[in-house]
Length: 258
Image 1: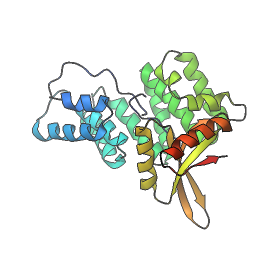
Image 2: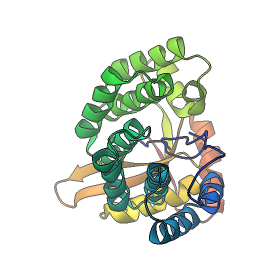
Image 3: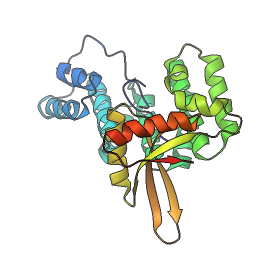
Image 4: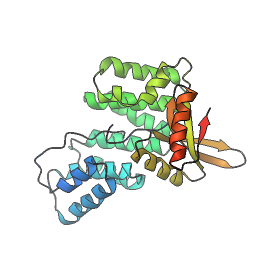
């Protein structure tokens, strides 16, 4: 199961940047919103290197954290989110930083730890936008743990409480599974690795190409833990075949599951 963290969501979507700020973050924000996360990181680190303390420096840290997260550097992203939580206690980005830590745990396969962070935030937040994101993420956690019933409950709450929210409309993959009586779907595998780093790198590349890519872990007695990179969750094999043909034409080794 993947976790969306792209600008169109990514998670997750970072919108509403202020037009007035003390730090010179124009290039950072432009690069981030354009999806050029390496450029956002480069420009953001430049600003940190030359600027002193500012009232909006926590915003810069948050953009950098998201950029590192999208670029697959989970360690640096985690460090930055922790800085926001520990050094900027009154930051308006505090809850979002904690959400980022949950997302990192989910992407690294620490599903139970991510679940705990999401549930804690859900019980404490008064931010409806964040609450909608948490419903979405908890549904993904439930699907990851093969609890389709619980996943559908979260999706139903998301749809009922926030029908116009971007999270409700965002990922058709989850809608396909939620509407399937068995919770089954077809997916296209494009890689299998013994290294989680290699799997995550390929996943991030596919996401940047606008594919719904994600990593599934499996354990084999002979080969040990494996990381399978897969794309899409489709209701019919015919739809999966069309996706397979497209990926194959782009040079990816493909196989449809189940």
